[in-house]
Image 1 (cartoon, rainbow, N blue to C red):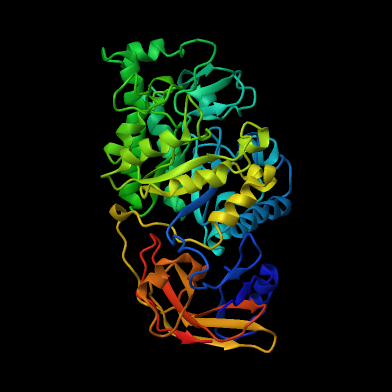
Image 2 (spheres, rainbow, N blue to C red):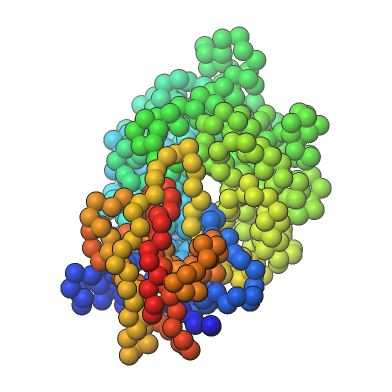
Length: 528
């Protein structure tokens, strides 16, 4: 059995769907894709089973136009074309999520009542890009069945210190006592309770009004130390410190932001995940016996980020530490930090995704072209690791030294399904019904099923199995997973696969998933 499932051209498929060539049928947007250009069906004994449940994502950074849009001033059509190309890349690599920066500098990628449009869209802060960027990105990602994690920076206001790039109506201009300059940038003061409430309100507006899958923070809380200078927050500390040591007070300020954000998200949309991607070292063992066997900068003291506490207290749904170092680096060894983070999440229901520094292949810091592939191979020994996130998209595309090609060929040969985070709730939908197949003279295999009205399914997976009496373990092996697609409620859905060679017929099964990825019972197997 060596059928090859070759991707059909996505735009042609969408055009066909829009044309309504098949009455009463909705064509799913998620046509089969893979980095290698084809998705082979499982061949027993050909290789080892592949994990079905993995979180796979890349960061799309917008600050100073790192990834998207590539420059300011692009028209709406050009911006959308660029974004679609990033989603195409995500699908080619069998990723299942994108993490998109939508509030890089106290601004917004959506019409916000709290802050102006981002200057990284049009070149001018407050400039209307002509469309709702967040709404568009969400729709485009979900059409490909990619999770959409909205990435917010809580306290950074401007990439310069004088505020000259801010509108007169910007909150930082209206409340100059809320901000201070440090390290060449402008920041909201995390120690002012009114500031914390405001930035939470600004971010929660997107949570309430958009169907995002997750709220995501990176590693920027208090700024990283610059030139040996302390933060200019002595007045704030005198006003709000309450006699607590200043380091503890600063950590308490960030802890309050993290705790309150999760509480507020849970109150309005308990299914929306809250994740943070912190600096990869919490504390070194020589400082705290609970720390890692490392010798680098500590987020606990350097930026007041007490990440260990966030996990242990359950204030985050996932933690995504930036373990941006190579295996064997003395001061911060990847092979020591992954086990340490695995031990931190052990016994909690906090998911662990590893942040990967693809940009260090581009810069030449990573000299081993197998560094990414070796990282993912190392992760296999730690079942607590639920996936990986790659920084950043432009470096993933650049594929310096073939590092991403090698990694994908060895670890992302098949699609994967996002792991369940149990404490978020949810439930499995009904099993798909009415599964049928048809082989067309054109060499296309169609797999169809009914998405029942009122179903809670938000996506489906299509599998190729050994026969009507297949083993349950076959649905735990990604070699058998052909694709996942977004659900279209209340219609008969259809996916098409181009068959390069079909020596014999196979059997096909469909499973459904709620928005938190609980899997339904499988459909009956259909021969095709």
